[in-house]
Length: 475
Image (cartoon, rainbow, N blue to C red):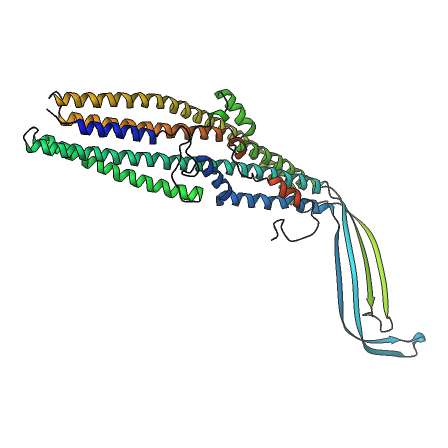
């Protein structure tokens, strides 16, 4: 019963070409001059995201723990000086008990001295503390690497979410345009009696639903845009298409599980935490050993508090001290037991992390495979929906279909295209998630053209620094 649909058909075909070109989330990237790229967004997030920079600062602070531990090998030197006015009044008994002698007077006194001490042996506590600090440095580096992976994955997700929601927004806008054209034609045909009031109401209802979906798409786009700004740190431009990163991932699930067990940063962090806990036990046990130290002192005194006749003295000493702990109230033993329990906890944490990483890899791999299959299914769905819509329109021209049939077919096509956009989005995000799960989501692997932060550089700058309060960056 519907006729005169040549114009909507041409509009729909034009929209199909434009929308499918826009929503092809995998393909040739647009030039950087006219579009932002996913690689560029990842580079910006890696360089500017405050969470990554915070972890880098935490890593630099942890580096200083090694210098603190190494100070146990170094001597401690203290200089002292004092000056003042001394008054002395003495009464002494003369020899033979014949009388007393009294002397009184004031004099200026001053003293200067240098004291140095060196620990020679403390139950290997300094060596254990150094290894503990180094283990904490390695653990913090892995924590930093994990933070970088999280931010890069968040950046990729934010970029793809915005790209998806922009495509869905444009899709809903084009759908509203088609529905408005359909409603205008339905009103014209209602005016001449070719369709009923029911057909007109159905067209109006579909347009209202389309506008509601458009408002929802606009809201989603605004939300995704704000997330993009939060993660990437800049206003988005015209986003270019993106590609999966499967080429950087293991070829099979078994290989992915092996990769993850070897290089996932949460696992390596837990391993270093176990090493640090072992050293903590050794530190506690070292408190039960004897301590051997050597101290030297040189002092120059002018005047004396005990004699007005003493003008100056020079003294020096070298003293060796051996201290053997016998019983200190039981605190050392409790500390050792506590450290052993913590070591057991760290080992259990490592087992827990390994299972969690295995589960994440398996889940991510399954989602990636499902996304690949979903793209094939939705592409077939889009093709079938396009054919069905053309067929329904042709049948409607000869009176075999109603306006509702045409509107339902149009909605089915919109839903299919939206599903394709979502599937392509999920495909790319899942590929990044798998790469993160195995521990390989890094600027080096992705080939980002940026300067990669190297935590070893700062560590080497401060590890053996004996003096100085300025950080390597000049603060």
